Image (tube, rainbow, N blue to C red; front, top):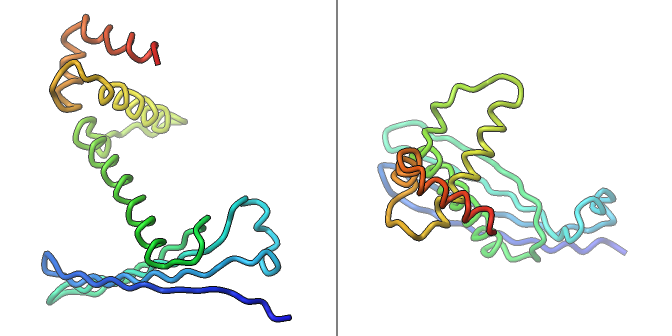
Length: 162
């Protein structure tokens, strides 16, 4: 009996900022008969390929292919949206860390220092974002906590309560 695999594809084209971007999402169902290692990923149902082509007007064309494993059934449009949502969150977090903590400028390179400080930055950002007592952005709240020992202590106490 031949294996029956489901597949789907979805394409999105956007033109903005002097470039044309084409993204093609292809999704293939996973069958444990042809992927015996699938037991390492409980709930694995599909593999997703995202191929992005960026044509810069009067410039070079670049291409990037990324692969993902997923617990989603085959629905390429939904798969595309899930990948897009994931990267929106990732990019938003990175932007926040870079703006408030200048993370990209960090030159810590020895041993586990970079990882350690990355964890501390994320922890402090989460603590600051949960605080609703002051109307200010993360960067401003960081500065207030550095200058005001009472506010600093309040943030630590709120963290300990959770």
